[in-house]
Length: 191
Image (tube, rainbow, N blue to C red; front, side, top):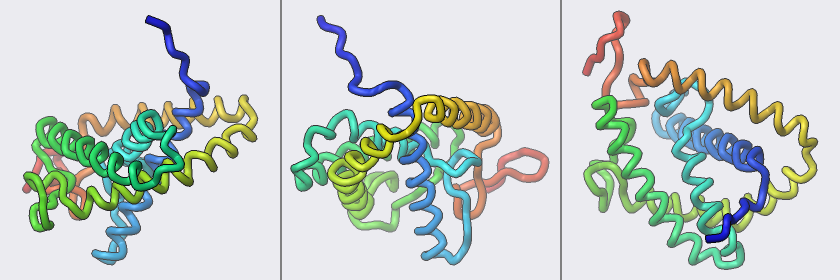
């Protein structure tokens, strides 16, 4: 079997991951601000990123970047892939910490409160925008960046993320507007 080489250097994917994780965090914060009128740092981690969006975006890149001229197909495939990722992520997080970071139980056509039709449609639209519009733009910007600066930014982001992930493995970001449970001041979980 031939060893297939990735079309870009590693830093291309690291930067893309963090950009998409930040966009996902921003989306969730703005959405929550509009609906609940409060700024809430959404997600398991403390930093301004939601890794599930970074992972989802990279999945969409690897699976669908060759479909840039087929937005309807990308919409349908993105809705499916991202819904599966969201379901599995919700399942893992709840198994790991016994906490739900989101619950769609009140939404139309939900599955165990982990995913719903509206969320799938939003992921479909987001995936089509990413694949058909954002990825080509990102490619152009990436190619204009100095390699040394790209490497430095990647190393810095990876170090911050590793420290945040280590801390949050023990004390995940929980509380009002973030999860179904919260930690007390002495570190114990409260409902």
